Image 1 (cartoon, rainbow, N blue to C red):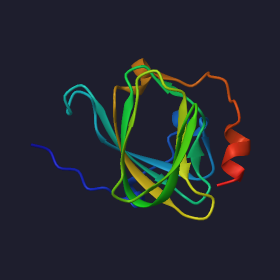
Image 2: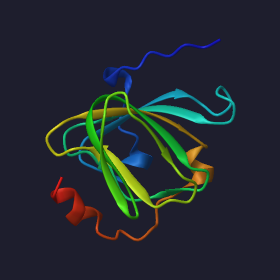
Image 3: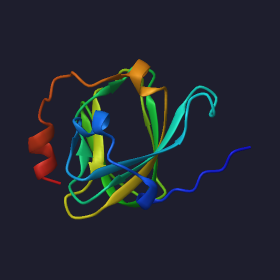
Image 4: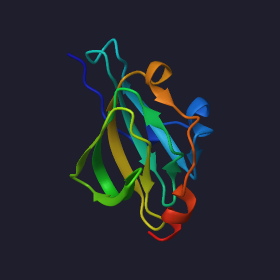
Length: 134
């Protein structure tokens, strides 16, 4: 058994991921795929206005909101999420997620290892404009 404690002070700015983020976002790697049945487990801390750029996970992604208020958007839907919400992003779905502009948000992530699963080079679509209305 392995236990991890989530803590923003233990999270860092992952330079490889940082280029795909907007605003202040810190990532704490909790468990590797080797430790967690083939999936990476991460805790992501978004400051107000922090969010991901649009991207796709070939195998989908599970988010569990642990703190604050955020936004999760897929191609044709944008939703406000709050602590206690769980979100399933379907495999291959264009999406982005992060804090609202005025509130921090943290979420736990369960996903296939990024290097094998995530496609960051996707159309940006209206992600900037739609966020400004949240």
